[in-house]
Image 1 (cartoon, one colour):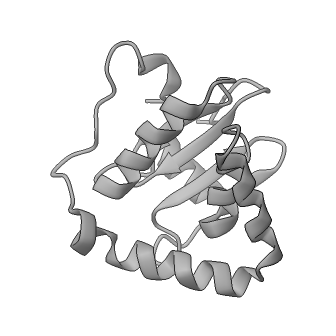
Image 2: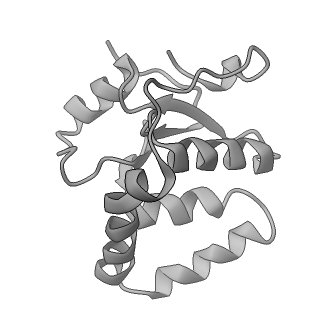
Length: 139
């Protein structure tokens, strides 16, 4: 199976059982005025296919990935900043965080990711989008 998304779209892969991740996806949907993003859970067939294709160690990166067929996968703080850069003002100002070296940005990112279940909780199953939002999600 090849993950097929339209050329002008970017795919956000997220932890479908993480409350913080689900809230972040809902925030992106609300602020994605240019309809740039599609979504799928890391636990989905499409998510697992991308993880396998790019040989991603989910013990090291397990909360968010940004995928485009042309550019492949970016992860952690780089993915978060790139996502924010497409959300318009003022979210797009987060691009200034690229001046911070990745090892520092990713240390902060990893600290939050490691504690996300403790701080924000965890669902028993992946979030199911409403019928209106279904077109934004890969199965």
